[in-house]
Amino acid sequence: MPNLCEIDFNCGVATIKINGEINILYKVELINTNNNSIYYAFNTIANTKADCLIEEYFIPWKVNVYVNEVLVEEYNYDASNKNVRINLDSTALGDNIAWIPYLEEFRKKHNCNLFAATGHNNLFESEYKDLLFCLGQCKCQIYMLLIV
Image (tube, rainbow, N blue to C red; front, side, top):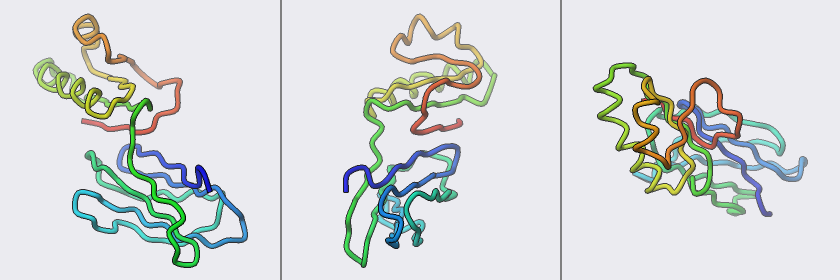
């Protein structure tokens, strides 16, 4: 069953949608891979979304999907070539200067398209050419949104 699970992570909410046959009951587990603990477990039918409240800081999540107690899909967090947005919530110049190198490291580590929203975009755009600086809403699908 390719692409059975769709998931995105935005501001402390994991939205999980199962694409599949409507007459099947799916068991879903959201797992924190840092400690292998099951954070959520629930049953659902296909083509419905479930919003799970999660930690607002970065965790590499895993989703397991079962039918009749048989694992049919394992989805691991993977931001490669996906759009990730990180908002620096502080407008203090020192905070922005301190955080911006970590955004670049996150981009490199996760091989993602990183949209950065800072209070001082103009100061960083020429130095951090691989970050995509933005204000307001992004016009693209965001896989993960983090607020620092």
